[in-house]
Image (tube, rainbow, N blue to C red; front, side, top):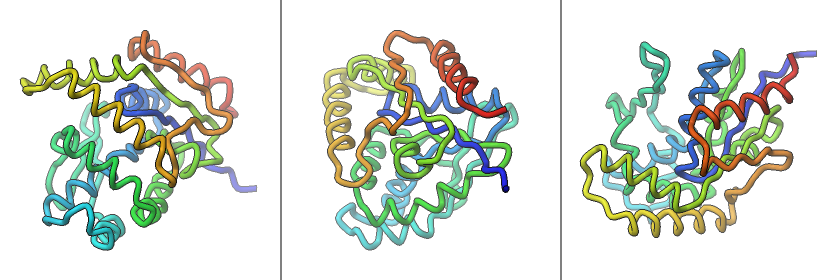
Length: 228
C-alpha cells in the first residue's frame, strides 16, 4: 500500500493568524507550505496587470489556468517570496484592495476549478501545511489534521490596523472593521466552497492568543492526529 503524503489543513477568515501560524508549523515540521489565499490574490494582481476587469469571467478563468507563479523560500526559511510573471509581488498582493478583489474572484466557480489541481500539486513528501479557506472542506478533504482558526472581527481589524500603521499607511479602523465584516459575510455566504469549519476540524479562537500560543495549540492537535 502506497503511503499517502500527510496534510495539515488550516482554514479560517482573514486576520485569524493562519498564515503566520501555518508557516511556523511547516517550519517546525520541515514540511512544504501552501498559501492558497495567495493564489486568488495573484489572479487579482494579474488581472490588474493586464487591465482585466472582474466582470470578465472568461478572462479571469484563463488567467487562473495559466498563472505564471513561483513560491520561493528565503534563506532563513521563515518567509516565502511570491514571484508573478517574473516580478516579486510578495508585498503588493497583501493590500486591502487586492484582498477584496481576491474575495470576489474566489466566489467564481471557474476560477476555483482552474486552481484546484494546482493547489493539490503542492502535496509532496514529507508533508504539506496548507493555509486557506477551503483546504479541509474542498482541496484536501482527506487531510489528517484539520484546524479552523478564528478570532473576533474586532481583533482581526485591530491586527490589520496595526500592520498598516507600521507601514505608515493612512487607514481608518472603522473602515477596516466594516470591510472585514463584509468580507466574512461574502466568504461565508458564497455558493461555492463557503468559509466554514471542515467536518472533524478543531476550532481554535486566537482572539486572546499570541502567535506562539496558537502554534503550540496547532502542534498539540498534530501530535494527537498524525500517525508517526
